[in-house]
Length: 74
Image (cartoon, rainbow, N blue to C red; front, side, top):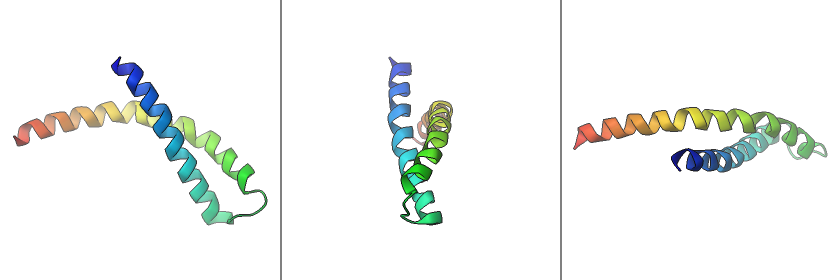
C-alpha cells in the first residue's frame, strides 16, 4: 500500500509542480504570446516525467532522513 500511495502522490505532485513551473518559465521567457500553450506543453511533457522520477527517488530518502533526525531530537 505504501508503494501505491507513493506512485499516486508522485503522479499528482509531479503534475501540479511541472504544470506550474513550466508555465511560469515559459511566461517569463515569452509572455502570453499566441504560441504560449504550444511552448508550455512542449516543456511540460519533458518536465513531468523528470519531476515524477525525482519524487519517486527523493521522497523516501527525505522521509527516512527526517524520521532519523527527528527521533534524535526528542
